[in-house]
Length: 302
Ligand code: NAP
Image (cartoon, rainbow, N blue to C red; front, side, top):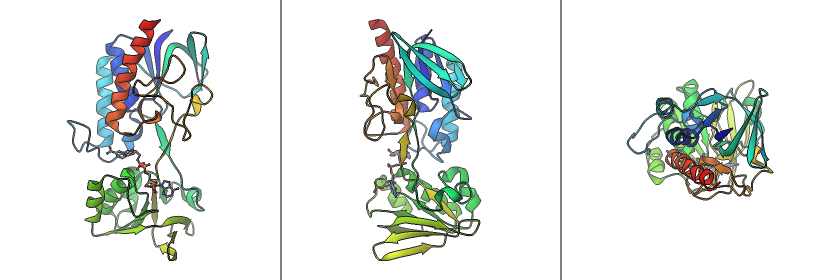
């Protein structure tokens, strides 16, 4: 039986792996994606991780993984389908049929992209509609695109796309932005960016490929002649496995404080999955460390 099963290999899961290995806890980090890193793999630049200013998201993920490997962190590919509490232990079932038992479970499963739910979005997903500017931006070199959203991701994406696209429309439903002011100011300085504010996407249209985004504005409908639509309207927590196991808030985030303890003994949550004010790489990594510290304390209590 493992001391802890760490589910997820983003910054929170990998930081937890490093702390678990160094604390000599028997552990396994389960990763369900093609590679370690979580959301940062798709981030063009991480400018606020201390000591590594301006590092690419992919490169940062690789550094985390190299650090894990050097510390002897144990990884396994696999998608978890069920986690059950059975008296003093947890049974973790994987899609491939294998079951593990562990004294504690640390969920570090992060979050996924929210969709708009407008006509055309699903139809053109992957062929004109994208959720990752870093991954797909190059396909729209020299073309006109729209970015939807007013958070850090939308503004960062728009800055990135402005470098390679002919024109970028930044479409936001309000005229105030959640994004950091420095980012918004950088975007305002881009000559090929038009801010389309107080505008909500109505539909995405085209014959076989995206040809326009139609938005509702205060003065009626407006057609933006774009060949790409980048949706950056926030995230939804990957908390399906925890439904019925621990308490979640109204948005589906695991209710857990700074100690990362969920309301069922032995269940911990770290990173974007947990209720918190600031979801960043640095806070996810910090959670991973804290969670292992708390897991050690929990195991000692028993
Ligand atoms: P976010 O901060 O939640 O912003 C989502 C944006 O999408 C908001 O502007 C929201 O509008 C808009 N929106 C939501 N639903 C919408 C809908 N149905 N239609 C139109 N617009 C909609 O999400 P995020 O930008 O993905 O960022 C997620 C977290 O990661 C944040 O905490 C962010 O700070 C962090 N992050 C950090 C870094 C970094 O450290 N460098 C980089 C990227 C992201 P309203 O504002 O009107 O609600």
